Image (tube, rainbow, N blue to C red; front, side, top):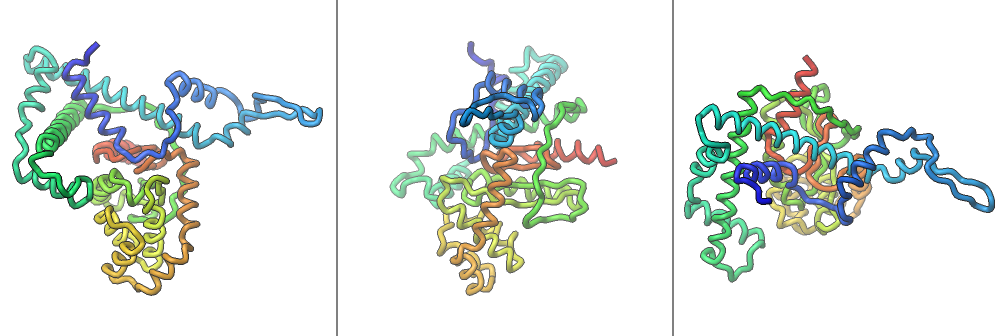
Length: 363
């Protein structure tokens, strides 16, 4: 069965909201049935319940559910996170679809497709030559296109990408407006994960909202999320404390050393300046590049280079990774907003929904 146009737009917006991130998953995701069974077992079995026995030299040995849960805690957390995100995505889609239908009826339109055509598709202009050239130049500079490729060769793909991006943005704006007018309130219980908020931070310790971010300096989605996080921190001021933790992914070869370099910059009081520098130069993260970035920021070069070459910050990075894995992090960026999980390079509205809900509870 084919999807109707309105459902295609909605699915695209929700997919963009929930799936944009660098993932470290190397094993197939569990099926819904498997995930549901694991989640049910996680909720229903007491830690002391014996779930297996075996004999060693004639002596019976027991395995409790608590034993198993401790051993596979990261996998269980990941399953629970996926379940929560699926519920959120499904709820969001359900309500938005109803609101779009109601708005179409209110305007006297034939159906929701007519509304989406009017408010989304008809308002998407053809990308300008300057916009196309900007994307092309960025792709060339970032090494994403071979040197011999011309702008004319890739122009159709760039136009399609920019057009789809604009459609998503306009659809998101429409949906946000409809939710606001309808005073949409979400009562879906949020699973909270306890994550230690240690590391370089912005904002007062007394802030009612703490955002713990696990990130990878080589991950393009983390680079994209940086601007969103900056916007959130700026908009909420002293109500938000942002804590950064390292989670370099195994297939990003320069990420671990970049994380160590940021920790070295932290020793000289310039973590955030160095953090911004790395995300602005994600194609230049080799050791020599890392040292040049430090020099550009006016750090003590000898002290920084000794710190980086010694590898003494690797333990800090591993500690952060371990904490992230224990919390169920399987990709970057990953955020914990007062313990509520938000994964991927999601729009600022996703942060706002959670933060506003949390702030209401403090009044």
